Image (cartoon, rainbow, N blue to C red; front, side, top):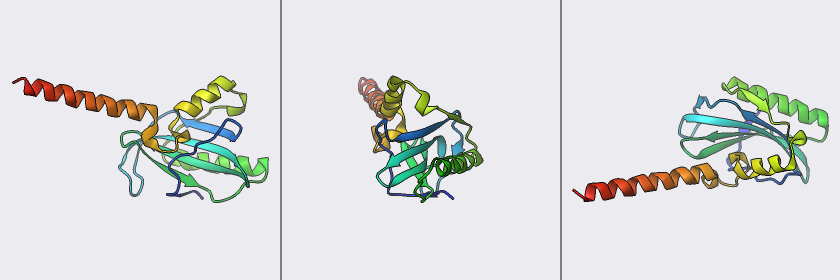
Length: 154
């Protein structure tokens, strides 16, 4: 059973800590308690830590630039437990309407892994630091400035 853990805003990790990565192929509209409803991306990530491993479900609310992190609460000690929690996490996000794809983290080239770590919202400490969110905020500022100048000309 996965539950929201408000302490998490992101899952920053290095390449060696990531055990598994699954990405959503679609962005269905979801409503998460206490968050603005809207289209979301889902990530299922297996991470190794100091006391074992854990599987996390990260839902990134695209329009709001916000997230929700779900945890199973169980520390994984074996490969079988990791697969079991991964399957549970995938069933959970699929029940929300996400179609998931295995990124095959371990088989991916180190350059591809580094690219994912630098661009996927799940690996950022704060969703507002995601490059796409920062670019969208800058674009909105530019549009507002341009519109203000246009209106001031009249």
